[in-house]
Length: 87
Image: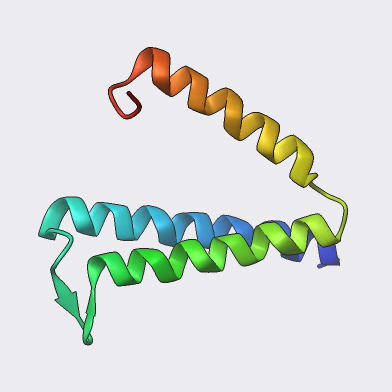
């Protein structure tokens, strides 16, 4: 496996772990505990791991922080229009 393949594989794994923690919060509540951590703490950890992978993708010039910010702003505008998450 080359470096790019490994980065993408670990990125996918981290995305899946974020999904799992979101599902657990929906099923058991944000304050549910497992091994001394709340579900929100576990979610934060997994999002931190995901952010690490995004940083590594940037270091490899696979993604641009400028473009990521641009796309995040576009998503923010869509959410404002199509959801109740943003006032």
